[in-house]
Length: 312
Image (tube, rainbow, N blue to C red; front, side, top):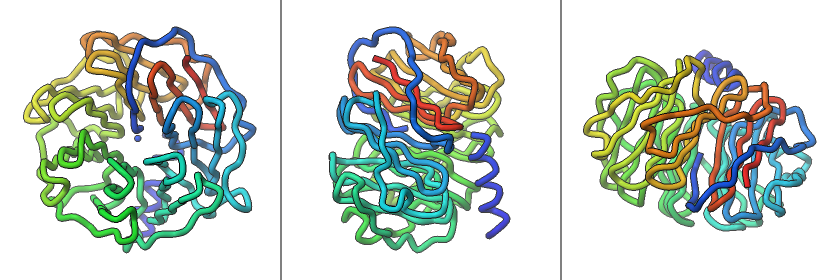
């Protein structure tokens, strides 16, 4: 188990999203002062003003001005001594964060205080996604998929085929979801996770991010610049040309056509034609970019060494 966790830590440290909604986007990414050099692994916004980012040593940062300024939003500056990998809020008050040690932390106060929820696993948890205040999924080491239907009061491991680490999870709605991971793994459910089935990705690359705009159309990104797209719910996956061999860590789409992928060395790729063409955008960042969140005309990216970028 220790070996698995160390592998996850190593991969993340050289390193998911949950996108949120849509309209047209102004050009230009600007760097924001985060006040920290901690690695920031996950970011999520519930509206154009309020958002959270999490990272090294249990750090939680909060903004209420659209990401222009950030403040520590956790007691004693950290809710755990372990790295927090992803964060998701279903409302301005209710949110969850997952850690490298299999911990799930919950807040009902917008992050002012946090409590540990029983995950029943020691596997590192790498991503979390909620479709509403009660129904959520977390994924991680050794192919674990955990599910709650009561806001995390209880977490139950769902039945999956035997697969390696799962890096990311995304639900198009309460029934249709995908989890992706190591060695080209793609798992799909059409019944809220009662059953998960493997889909053929035709790659052995690690898949690090996934996003669906509806139950049919979605994208997966991964190592060596890999971008896959499906228009039939994952029955068939086709490769899209990214123009890079750098690892891509996160992906998010504003609608069925416009989206971004982020990755190593400050790389941001943008498409306005559903991935038919991907073009690099200047970021001004040199560190790895690890997660992206969209909300209406705004977008935010976080990454290594306290990197925060804002669009709009």
